[in-house]
Image 1 (cartoon, rainbow, N blue to C red):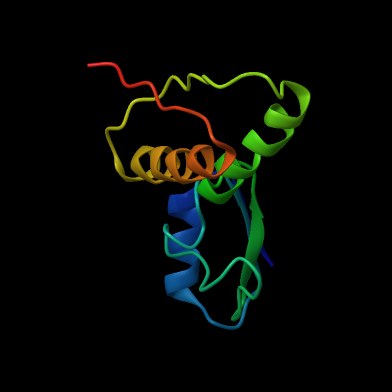
Image 2 (image 1 turned 45 degrees about the vertical axis):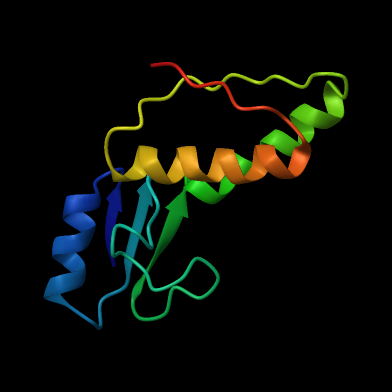
Length: 108
């Protein structure tokens, strides 16, 4: 077994090197977008692991916020839209906030 906690590069190198030895990773990014696994539900192959900050969770975090503060119509998210992971997160936030009836705020 190859364990690559918090090191995406090591996990990608290990994945390229073998299809038979199990590889376990942890990452703060999206493992599908990073090329580590084919899908979050069914990673397939010999690579599996955990992601603690993927873009899909960003939008879901707004639901409990809305339940805790139902009268709030304006929610600010401080994020830099530079880079692929940040762009996905911002897009996820925008889609989710629209479904919750919140207005976006954009800095310039």
